[in-house]
Image (cartoon, rainbow, N blue to C red; front, side, top):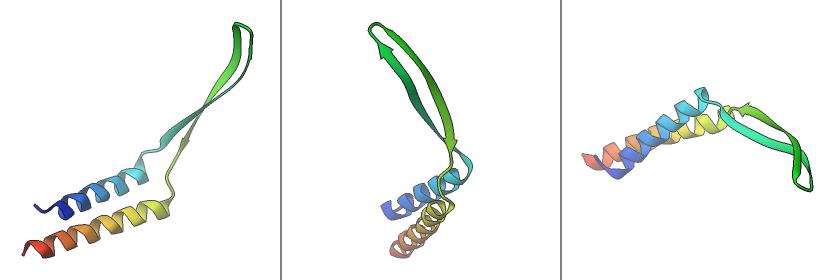
Length: 72
């Protein structure tokens, strides 16, 4: 297999995974007074934009086709 074809497979898998798996994002909010720390940690699950996912999928398919053409 050519390297371009493998990169295409990786891009395709990342594009499909970005549609399904949310990315966790946590923030710490608090006040530190001397040795004491009072705070709250908030966690949000954000998904990647569908446009980015589509670009990854289309790019992966394109790289797979390009890698296959150079193979023949």
